[in-house]
Length: 618
Ligand code: ADP
Ligand code: MG
Image (cartoon, rainbow, N blue to C red; front, side):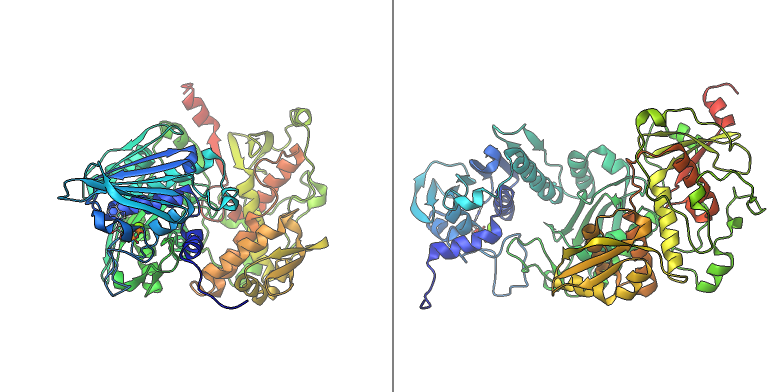
């Protein structure tokens, strides 16, 4: 075929593929346009999850009739001078309206400041009608109907209306957080009315907007950030460690008012909390970075939610130290709760862990596993004649027995009475009496009640064993019947293969399988049945995150922790009585097991005396 220039409408459709992914991305572009036009009120209406209709109305400065045609033309913008790095508006590429118009029916109705009458222009699948005079309030209304009617294949990628509505709401919330002086209204036949009243300008207004969107719980359980370094300003709110979540969806990061998703910054947040939050939990945070626009490049992707920093190390270090400093200054506060008094009666058992990094091998073989540091381990060695419950899991030097090959027990077996044999002081964690919510082992000692978080405890045991494996003999592995082929980006595959030898020590055997895949041949036996793909992906991410930043020792620590996290004894697993007791006995052997990998207790103890006090018997 001969080479020819593509038609305008095809060029627009190609561009639209990158900008207009789903209704939420259109809403983002239109709302950003309204903000750039200095609007103080923005109304968003959707129907059919945004697929049938999206209408964004603002009271901004409007568009002159003779500029309407430019507004919907590609590469036409009022926001950029000649310097692509000198960006002060949310938009600058001049392609959103042209792209939207190429994949939907777009109507742009506007009345500019000082204009006597408004005007409108219609674009339908790239064909233009107008501009022509039309009645309008001051400001602009952009109306998008029948999204993707020109490219029906794209419609198939849409999720359910409900899912698209959620994505639109999420987009608005993300934007609204950064602009508390703007009044936002979200409405339409497909949703309940949501309104964020303007709260003004300044820190107080920012707090109020965050409370509107994330709830008062957020502002009550976060500490304020305000720091400056080398011309970068960081403000915002970061959660106290005990107020956390299972995913990062409540981490809001802004650079010059623009909501961005950036791996380096989310890694920095994670690092800032690494000592105080479990590694599978996430802080809740709203972070606003103000930085000279010429020190960043926002023109990485048409969606403008990626950013490159001229000096990423400076930014990373600044974010980590600002958050750490604020946490330190605030001290650790408990989550606000009405049951604090009750919780205080429970004593978390946090044994002193010298360092999150490895002890050198000498100290390992010497005293590392001597239980003398733990308050509850008797000074004398374990008696060999103690009743061993799980006969098969005796403790060997440099190998930690773990619960493997466990069978899920039926509920009635679980409720069978358990004979109390371990309430003597020899067993500080007592006898397992029950398992509740499929994750908590309730045990009874001579004078207390103990609740163990089985997942956290097991994770810690596996973690300790993995760390030990680096200095002793490699951990046992389990050969997979069929090697599992895991596809990964080329860099990730390369990174993992660089660490093949270390991973083998942990019992993970991998091999190159073409440029962007890896064959997993054996997995660490102590993890039980693992999802090899997700283990390998997580490891690649950890290595990428830490290989340059934190040095080898820390990286190995992260690898061990990531592997431990994949252990199959997760919450939700029903344990037999003897399995529970075996876990308790293993915990007693390992002093570090009193805390999970990041300092949370793995068990709590309520003394009988305190129980009596709670019931006012004392
Ligand atoms: P960009 O925002 O990157 O400039 P768009 O395609 O989104 O590109 O918009 C093109 C131009 O149309 C903008 O530069 C702006 O001048 C004008 N425009 C778009 N939406 C509005 C609005 N709501 N109010 C005022 N002007 C607008
Ligand atoms: Mg725009």
